[in-house]
Length: 317
Image 1: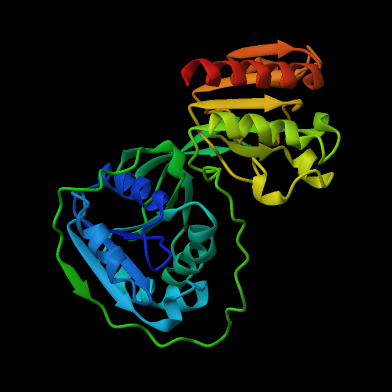
Image 2: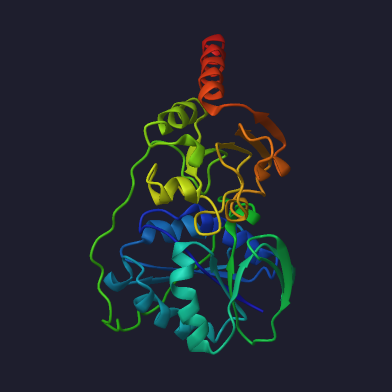
């Protein structure tokens, strides 16, 4: 039984969720190979080689893999698939882009967004916006799996020395073309991996009022999130959206401000270790899952919160 993990990277460094994926793979079997497909990504190969759980690194170098277009990456994964019982990738934009293609070409059923491994052929995944969990058993010879990264701890990053093996690139099908990438630059932690997240909802009433959220985020070194209602209202860009159609986060601390707690939002944050809710509606559903709740006007509560954080910073200095 061998497992192929498809690593996400930027040709310079490995992305954090690939470490979570490798750790998940170790719950199935310890014969883990990691595919690094990219352009001039030798540094990523060395980084992965040092991970103790990895037994072999497969390196395929080509300009056609530089921007990991699904149309170019899929033929390579399919070519390698025959040697493996499991092919695994994170259930984020990267994995969701190419894994369905791989499963279709292999004529197998993809198992999506798993949160637990019961056995090599038995997995748990959330359904109905996280309100129920399905235990699924796969009889496919090759199992194509995407995993919810936040449900697994990252693999250790040092102490290993896996061999690096060159793999020939497949011919690019030339059916798609990379145009450009637009990235949001921020000094704050990435939303998907942040230890602290503070999110605003429709109750923020305007984009201007999100300055209150941003000020507290700066003090807590937190990522800023938002409900879909806030995004749809134009208060903040959609890369901040938390929920079923946004990002799934599992921080140590999640602060929900002016968020009522629709099922779609809860699906993206209810596994957070500690949840704090601030809402003036005492009947808001968010309070049903909150560890701590404050029934208050956010425009009074947030300035007071910021004032106390400033006092704390002064004491620490």
